[in-house]
Image: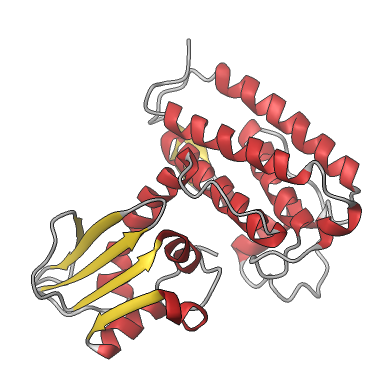
Length: 274
């Protein structure tokens, strides 16, 4: 049997992003592995370690037995501690050790995906023992690996792949979070609409409508007289939504119109991942 057609786009996106990451880090000298990335507290080595760790757990390898240092300022939640384990255990690995482990993991995971015969609705284990479907797991993984590819590109000054298969997965994942950002976290007025006009390598116009009960829904139809509207480029949208920059840091790249308290609240709550 082969991979279910519903899952193939996620496998394709992962393959594209993980091979791009491998290509980015193969020529790095030892010192470049220590360069800072947009992820708080994480170097290039740490981001690659995180990606290796994610794929290791997707493959089914046991998690490392390791005690975290007490002075990691960027680790404050249970999820961050969970994720940091795979990172900290590799902090003293050399460049050849990192690239070799990454290449081996790519080979193993590609083989696993070729032989994957489970249905999209199969329940699998996620971080901290959470249960989710195989489709949710693969979608989230494709999203994460593409975002971390972008983190590495930012750190290394090698922009690219903003319209890759992983970018389209990221668009859908981030758009799925917009209703909660606008209606719940920013508490937009009931019976209102907020419009997002995004341009660049990936373009879209989306409206979040908030109904009389305060529930937000994502629509493709434009709204007349929205309570707020935002115009920004795709790269800035991603960096904001993934918590890589603050709204203040990219104020010159975001055009916000509407009631100032509402636009400020939306931008303040825009990050849906870290």
